[in-house]
Image (cartoon, rainbow, N blue to C red; front, side):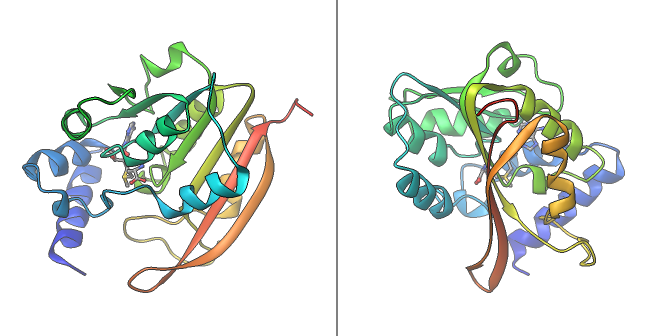
Amino acid sequence: MTENQSKVQELAQKSFARNDPTGWFEELYSTAQGKESAIPWAKLKVNPDLATWIEKQNLLGQGKNALVVGCGLGDDAEALAKLGFGVTGFDISSTAIAWCQQRFPNSEVNYLVDDLLQPTKVNQHKFDFILESYTLQALPSSVRPQGMKTISQLIAPGGRLLVICRGRDLDEPATELPFPLTKAELAYFEALGLKQIEFEDYLKQEETYTRRFRIEYTLANEK
Ligand SMILES: C[S@@+](CC[C@H](N)C(=O)[O-])C[C@H]1O[C@@H](n2cnc3c(N)ncnc32)[C@H](O)[C@@H]1O
């Protein structure tokens, strides 16, 4: 484990022990002091699993709006804006949002501080496309259903949700961050009124191979 990864585990464990499932994100971003290398998930480029999906779908955003959940340093939000979507990117960390605004001063993206678990701003709208990549897996399982519920309520009629996350089987433990999701946990989206369009389960080569799920949903009551 790298020094950065150990720091993340430590900050998160302390935050969880205080019964604060999300406080560690702002601590991590603010103590990074503008160094992207201190943020383990910040790759400063669009997520390749989003990029390949966009290409496969020939995704176009003209006249549509999109929401990026836990947008981090903004690269995925910027990629969707380039496709023509009117994009809102939100994050619980005010430092992350200020960082996005600094990195992309001429951005068309509406960057907002909001909390997926208790939204006050993003829930004023519905979205044609929602991207959730790697935020649910950074939340403890006790609050993940609340996050999934919020996401499902923000999809516009005819809209789509793309979830990208680490994956595991039920009998595999998830003891440290990021917590890979199981298919059973993700099935809660269907209980919330969504329908799976495609479920991809694959290995991704990083430092080692890691299992990923990439799932596309729509509202269940649509054809
Ligand atoms: C693991 S990072 C992933 C960032 C980005 N989505 C990516 O794919 O690189 C999770 C992000 O979600 C944000 N986040 C965590 N809990 C959140 C919440 N309850 N509401 C909004 N954002 C949250 C964190 O601050 C962090 O930027």
